[in-house]
Image 1 (tube, rainbow, N blue to C red):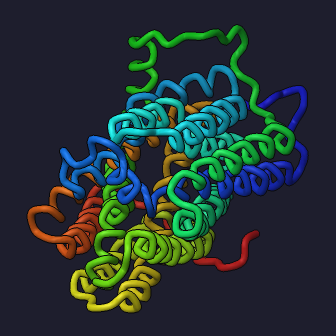
Image 2: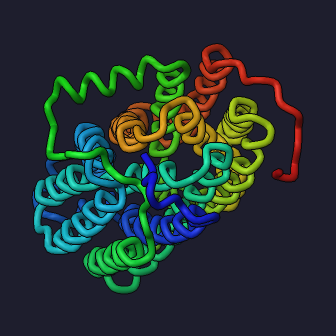
Length: 418
């Protein structure tokens, strides 16, 4: 709810959006900075030889989102009770400490446990989305959440490339300390740059009664279109995360003479190219979705993403992979931003923390299962099969969206906002 005695100044939401998007870029850039070399780093630790490289890569990538799928709905509920800005700072500063500790891990088990603790503490993206959704006008939600995704994928685009270079130049430990600093900067930016207008209900206190939480979530899930959107977000989580654990291994297969450090650099480049394209797609298609309709953008983007993932299973060199990742990434930006905006329009003001906490739980559960399933698919059928599997995920989103999303109200096409 908004403060009735102190209405939000005109365009204040734009200031909040810009600050949170910048903080999102720093935070996600830091978190994803370690992705290119994590599957390689964990193999250098003690006790790593007991598990296959593919499964170990899946475990270290999957641990945070699997744990986060249980924790984020609770953090989202507390955000509605105490304020979304506080949840952003809690998540950012907490994860900064845990990532710094990962640099001191001596065993694969210790690293996986720290990654799980990261998932328990995190919820950065959900908290940012709830903060922005609560401050922005409903009619600009596609643009606002699309812009927030620009911050997200700007960080995702830069982080892996920087992480790969740092790992190649300084070893696997230094990037963990670097990412911790980035997260601290993100927290300070929100602390001093955001003036939240949301006022929690009077008499709010710590209340994590499971029955009351389940009751509030049940109300949200009964709203038209919400369960369909969550199913789309679940599939999108699989599509987004399936490539991460196999990218370094696939790069080494495409470049047989690449050493581990060099593979980290190329794998970071692959993830960076995809993320830059997804950033552009999220902004452009998010802006268009406010005018053309979220459903239309979602369906078109899912079809195009599937079309460009299929040939990735047959690439023969790194250049082909980079080009196809860029084309698929642009379309995937629309698949990401449109459902997030739908949730804001399908639900009520004041429930943003719970809505996006549930959304993060669904996405995190998928993000955790995706690396494990992709690793198993890669181990059984080969690395190329993972790219075909991602295409199937996007085709499934196209079918589900076409059949189960509420039909939009007819609206006149317009390119210029009123």
